[in-house]
Image (tube, rainbow, N blue to C red; front, side):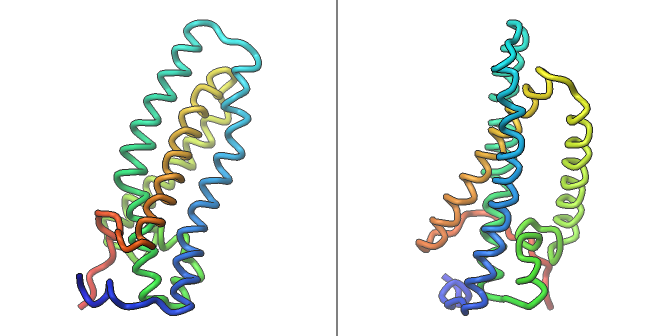
Length: 179
């Protein structure tokens, strides 16, 4: 265990990690809340057997690809690790923008910045496109998204609780190398 892991965070550091990780959870929770009614709408209107098949396959596929692979294995541990770093090294700008910091949108390696901003742009583009899709297909897509986002939110919370108990997640915070 290194000396950074033994260092206790300041009050500002505790606020920073709570705002950073909590802000990401709030952002994901808001998305789940707004998409869930659209994801459930096909259940109210009735679907053909192929719609049901697509609904179930999309839910399973997105649970695995977005929830497990995207969130649990990559994004969620990184959010918590970056939050832990922020707790021990708070700076005014990083604390102010802590959710963006925890998402790897700034103060990160070049690769992380490119990947994080590319994924963000891709997600925004997909949101705009999916809004143009009619039901039941929009709900079929949205059910997978809601499941993936829910999985990711739960993963962040589990990793955060474990980190508070002294067992941080495995992975890289993708912080820039400082001389």
